[in-house]
Length: 140
Length: 140
DNA sequence: CTGTGTGCAAAACGTTTGCATGCCT
DNA sequence: AGGCATGCAAACGTTTTGCACACAG
Image 1: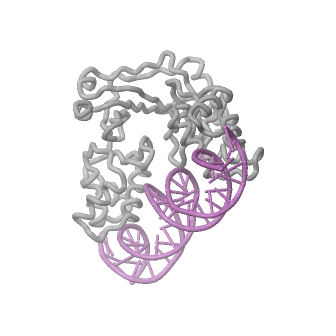
Image 2 (image 1 turned 90 degrees about the vertical axis):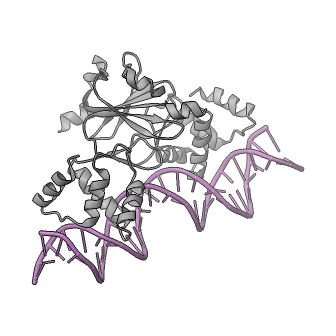
Image 3 (image 1 turned 90 degrees about the horizontal axis):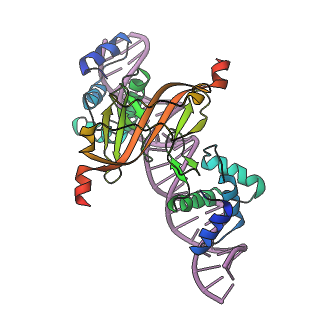
């Protein structure tokens, strides 16, 4: 995702309106590494802008996703999460506290077996590592 | 997952009852490579045992998952899928027809950067490859 | 015969939609 | 002023639950 300022410009150039609700959502997402769910975003923005609705949150997230500004991630059984980091990267998920953290792509480049490449043309991939984070490991 | 016979034995040893419904679900799952959803399983078993309910399907899948006989997979935004292959393996997902296929682990062994291993103890991982399958590639 | 499993109906959950009103541009 | 955005309420699809009855052991 771009900076809030950038996003505002992109919205303007698409003739989409800049409302306080949208601006609030932009700010919450900007450089957010927490992989918030719609609910997370909703409760944060509600503190600033108490009359906001879930509908607006979902609709704004939907626009941002369609514009390619954020990713909707489906790792959690319970609910979807949103990620403003749209570069290829991967996730580590703590099975005890459910915290999701990023891993930048860097060295991780799994190769598909050649036989499969005849059957399938990959365009992207995603790795989920499951395990225990330092904090939870100590508390065990 | 084990064979149906094996499963029956394990159920017996846990004092769980073997009903025709459960047996039907076992048979549908046995060596099933299709990653069926609850709905897929329900409609298959309904042909054999027309009075079966969704409830029974979900409850049976839940028991099997808790026993570690099947995996619940969360790759599809829409619904959960079930996989009787509980060995470490990965998935390729065709973005056009949504078909999910398996990739046995073999050569794919992504390594986490050393810095992260200090913060996080991985216990398992899963890779999703997204792309286009041969059939859909042709139809484009 | 006993207690677990079944299946109905209803609820729960996250998410989406229709529509009248509000407000950005 | 015009039209897109908002927010309510209702609908949605999947999954879960409570409960009376059925049936495997």
